[in-house]
Length: 464
Image 1 (cartoon, rainbow, N blue to C red):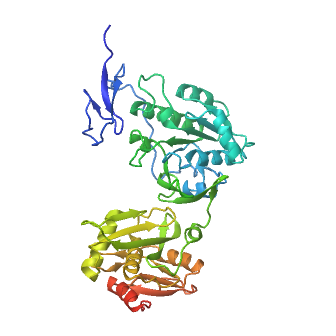
Image 2: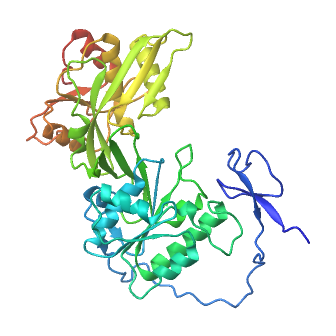
Image 3: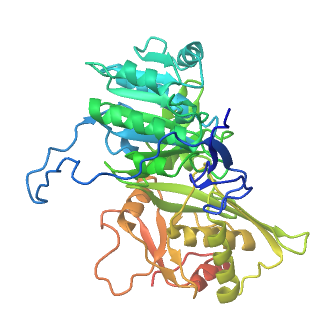
């Protein structure tokens, strides 16, 4: 009997090879190439003149009404998705194991089931396990339809009805399989085919589809990269499992803003919504401790105030250590180099530890000045001025550059009781950077030298 034809496929990018190799030449990933059977039939091309003519319309013509939203009732989840779920849309949710993805989606499904129809399909847990979690979350009486299945054919047959549900949650896409393929569940071919069948059904029947995806050790969603292009929205659930805060971040959203975040707190009764994350992140901040600064950041459309902590200690080794949690390590190296070269601050023989309190990860350059403030405070062992909020980008010459949405940052700071703000200097702009009704003293800083002088003198920076 002839041996079935096989080839080797990278599970990270989908590249195919004739023989096994340890490293994929397409994506440079190691140990991701797996043997898979070759499909029985491969399309050889399309015959000319056999297709259906596609009707084209004008760009300026009358378009359809905005898609209706299914408001789940979970304020933070609705904020990240752009105001609710859109009928016929597909959402991919990724996150580390044990971070709370299943808990969050079960709570969302229970909220939707209160006024609509929600279905929760699990390929990893039995129905009794889901019921136990629902009882622990206080959702035992929620009218959510549960099922444990892994066959895409069975799932499609069960959902393709006259009255489909409003929301379908599939946990997770890596456990499903299409029986027309011989490869194992979780492979590139199975993940792509399973997602394609479910997304096609969701758009035809008009229900919102939420797919849970596993992540790799690098933090990206496992499976083919094309999976993120197939869906309408990609959400990442972030946070430390040992910490109570969780961040739901939108990476891609065809129906709303990207980089929007929702903040949750893990409690005994599940994930609780945090409507004012700034107050929660600053709840344990102390004004009499050196090496700390409060940064006014923007996450999506929401201003968020967080505490940035720095610790500078003598190094016991020839190469000082640089440890960063919640910020870009490369940007920390740049700020340290500017402080040493432009301001004469000696940091070459010292270990530097930087932490963003609360488990939030900051990506915008506006945090440069707050990081520099925490570092200078740690080196001089002097606390930053009380009730001071800081933001601004640092250039390689030591200059402080302006950042966007300054008004929104200052309004949030004034709302939380801050009285002083260290901000970039205005350059050739008329008017004030903050509304006149804010009780906030604006202190402008054009260069890092002024920041150093603030701690050397032990007083605030004078306005320029």
